[in-house]
Image (cartoon, rainbow, N blue to C red; front, side, top):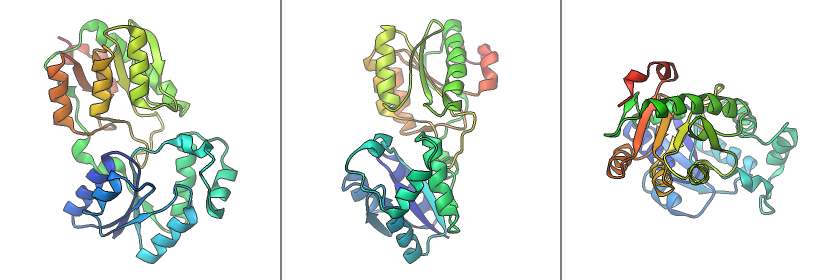
Length: 280
């Protein structure tokens, strides 16, 4: 097995490359920017290729040349680049874009996945490769949520499911059973900042997988930036779905939550109806 990592921004491509290397898997990476991610990957994988984000034909040629059998797509991708004037797609990318019914995340991802699978390439699960950073159910902070906060989490999860079903976003900010903000193209951290600001204080942030979530791409992700966005904007709670959320720098995030009197919990949706499992 030889794996290619299509790497977006952030730490996830690095963590994935390290996890695969630990298992003795030969790996290359495709990157789209000359940045820190590229520099760090060059020290881990056997080879890094730099190309444009819409150069599908070139990527396929690299896969053929390298004998790639498996592919992992990981890291933050700014979907707004699809509307930019510097995209410059090649013919294969133009054909994919032309057939899209819309430009939602799932639509784009499934179109790309179909293209790679038609060439005999297996798309790998993000949650399997990065199992070490998928936390189990529990309250990870010293502080526990109140009954009112648990009701907000349950309500927020319901809203997040609808948001996910429409393939719009995964993050909802709630206060007293009132939606302060929902995620769209701006991403998790900006949604948190906007929602917590509107709530003034003690907002509850809920991030959940889509009902139709495919764990090969676009899993919910939080990290230190998300925790800081909660605290800096006077929010109180960050709740994420168990088994389906990648938490980058878990221990660092827990320490930050405790040092800032923030509540961090990982929930199973069915347990939201058993609040005594979480409540103070």
